[in-house]
Amino acid sequence: MAQSAMVNEREVIRETGRAALVQFLQSQTCYKMVRKSGKVVVFDINIPVQLAFYALVEHDMPVAPLWDNAQQCFVGVLTKYDFIDIMRDYLRRGRTMEELSGYTIRGVISDPPPQGGPYPGSRLTHGGEFGAVDVEASVYEACQRMFTPARHRFLGVVVPAEVTLLAMVSCIDVLTFLVAQFREQRRLFDDSIVDLSIGTYKGILSMEATTRLCDVLDLMEQQDVAAVPITDAEGRMLGAYHRSDIAFIANASDAQTVVRNLEMTIGEIMHVSDAPVSGPGVTSTESMGQAGGVMSLDPNGSPIPNSGAALNLLRTHQTHTCRPTDSLQRIFELFAEVTFERVFVVNEERRCVGVVSARDLVGYLLRPLR
Image (tube, rainbow, N blue to C red; front, side, top):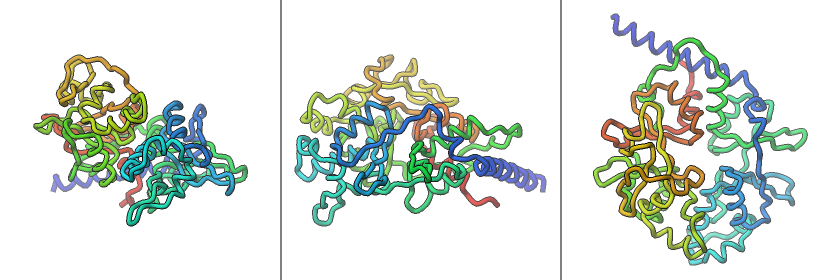
């Protein structure tokens, strides 16, 4: 009887915490969430797609909306990994990097597909659609819009009367805003992410460091996975590879080198671009077996102790981890601190047992209240 009462009390606390978060998000407008110092980079669809990619890299922007001047409206968005997928698609179809450099964004969108295959424009994030939310809409409405069947990863915050785009926001922006602005004295978020069923804990795709980059990218695209744990032969996690990683392009001296880099192993790629590893309650030594918080792999995928961060291109390969027992509060704070899309859940043996994304956390807030 006492145990049943404790379970019910814990469930009430959980629902109370979630209801408080939902109420807060419903009371805040998207305008308040938009960073005052933020910027938006917009691409006209008549510019070369390769030029647009390098502009994203130069401005360190994850996404840019696409503007069609003929229609006088936004027609989609472009991300770094959209360009990588488009590039790989053209290479598979026998086209060269030199040919790709001549394609405009409009040309990619309208390029007819090979028989039975996807067309390049379908590889754009949101399938070439632009999702937006009114600047006066609540943050909760924006979250709901991200979880419509279209599954918009990025939303434009617009002033409809002025046809003005103020910002592009994602689940990361929601979490950052939540941690910075939400104040609650009661201990409502002490349950672990596993107890709350937040994240994915079955069918985790992982790759050994000796796998070729082209094979990793193919599998990630087929399974619609944004990042994969990289492991040693025993399955212990060495780091992670992100689909938006641009090191193999940014480090290339010419187009031929880009193509050759696709044949490199993940271990070789990560050896070229090293980065620190961090996580709440998990030191880099605990999670990745490295001293000093720096993880580097030799060309065979073996860790190199105490190696420095050679290039650290846009935080490439930076890996954040947590434990299955970490509380929801700690995970919220971690996402807000590192502004990364996901963290990997590792056990005591440094094996990846789950993945928690920013989308998982926002999705938890959208579950129906009991």
